[in-house]
Length: 433
Image (cartoon, rainbow, N blue to C red; front, side, top):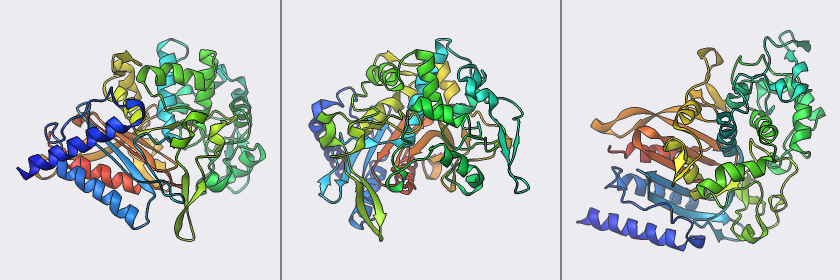
């Protein structure tokens, strides 16, 4: 009886939360009971308590945790502060910077053009951007800078899977290419490097073609400006700016009404501030009220420029989970989605690294592949999630084996995604079927 009462209270709270979200934006997302859908309510309660405990301890600013099982929202916790300084609470429709979680969305947008026959995955990049025909590789093996011809051209496929040799120059093994990126102005700036290069994407891509590659194309996974170049290709293939094509091909069909490359003036009140740790304390480093995102940037970043909400990103994840379709709208064919989430790396490329840690075992076309464990005790079994994270501590998991989606949003840089990994694992362990 107690468990039934607790589940009923959780369901009623969830329904109330969704009803109070702006304009009823979750109307297309039905609400379900976790236990009925084969997910432990206890695990969901534990996940929320961990978030609340970390907020109370001053470890994090807050967190929105969305769990969708069998295409029904079974959990949506909203805790903490969109602006710690003003004690402004997060809401169900808080808009946040998703940084690298832009990459899967732009990759899907590009694949709609692949389905239309606009390109082939193994086309050389220079076919569409001729400047890349002259690209060279920087050899630093004997501590002298030598420029070598690549063993093969950069392919479009290399951009999807980050094997082009183009990087962000953020890691120790990339330092010898850093002066070339700095010379071309290709670096993020502002506090904690939160703003893109100060130029148009078209100009930036031309400059990237002048920078030597870290390694031969296809040799290994090196995280970088690859999806920004892919975004420029979307413009070339479609004939319209990237922001317009993403809106037309992804956001409008899926009802992602708060996902864009800028924040309209009428939505500024919902745009969360960005936090970072200063002298051991979390503080606001970029207010949502007077952010450059309101005007937008010249650099329309396919690799990190989008803002979104947890519910919007949940819709995107459901489209992928359901083989390219959501709520009566088909974005991609199911076999194309299968290609997106098929590992594109050979064993020679090594593990996928994000930050300083190995975060995945493989990488598809815009999505990382990660081995996880579902269930516990006699129900424990291995599975795979399709995932990625963003610089401000946003992340998502898509687990077809359990018909499960998890989305976690908060706003603090730099990312470690430790909290989302913790709560995702707790929920995954609560899967019963």
